[in-house]
Image 1 (cartoon, rainbow, N blue to C red):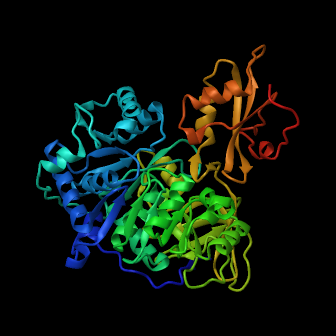
Image 2 (cartoon, rainbow, N blue to C red):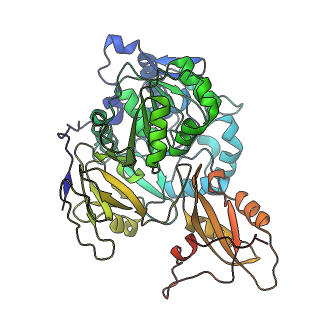
Length: 530
């Protein structure tokens, strides 16, 4: 059966992201602070002017509507201006993970067909190596914080180029092209239109209730869809103040909440662990904090309750995917009786259902009673257009009637709230980051001493899950666990590193050759690795 949202539907304006966020700013909004980045800040009027100037500079550099521009930068004013400047110019943003290795950058550049690149000085070496491997010219390179030989943000804004006149269809024009592993496999470009992003901002607004009175701490990376659309764009649309941090450091995080009187925090479960358990938290005045929203990975109910008790905040948990722009469910803001261990109820304009993962038959839910477990499928205006250049993956993910397979096994609770109980997909969630086992297996198999390999998730209280590798050595070969870990670490982003290595005689596989990960996940470590 199809379960509909208990919220009334919201209107989805037929406009682009720029117009939805910045058009019609009132005089009082123009002077309100939009974003704080260390000692720098911009009002909404200043941010809008900077976005327009950056769009004009891009157009002067030859960026045209439909072009793909790679944005590789940490949270801050530069990211916000560049991101929205790209959209204002009619181009498409493909955000690059700040932790990516040159090889990973090259793969994304080739697949997305990016024609321009925006980064910062500290990320420039990896960016240059990745663009060289991908064959992308550095002529279309912008280094936001000024490196000799490359245009900077200050120079481009000072040029004063007028923003171009752009005519786009929000329903079909791609706004962003983030990369996700979907329910399985290697990263794929997720095609999200302006309407997809606008829709999810509109859908989340009544559920999350960010207001102009809120100071929102922005530590979740903007290059990730959660940080991009829920944190950055939703806050700007609702005229809150963003206080950005380039990375998570507990002391800096707590200091910022105290000094900036932060009222609203979007976090991932590893941050919740620190806030609930670390003794240093008691040393800071966090009384301004009123709402904490956890997403990107499941949050344990016991941990959530401990966080609520310690901080005295309203804790919400949400469910999302890059393919959903990203949110489909959030804990009801005004109903504290819904367990913080659930992912909440469907937000406006969302329908979902659960199906038997073996038969595909729909599972019935009776209000007031829990359902049987099943895979959750979601339909709404925020569902992606598909995976770039991958019709097979698109077809296997989106049904003809528009329902998208999440790959998560859920139980629907008595009030229509959902609980994630398992995952069909094989992704490992390390501190909220997606780590595809297939990608790590491919890296492992390039080692001449490794005959076969499998990677699974290993439970960890702090990180959520750790990548654990099972390695079969070539006959007569010798290799230590540390050497395996170092080999992979040299070739992937830090969050993708293998953390545990076990050596085995053979990788269990089905008759079709598929790795039987379930046979490995619960395997005890009976002896240290060689």
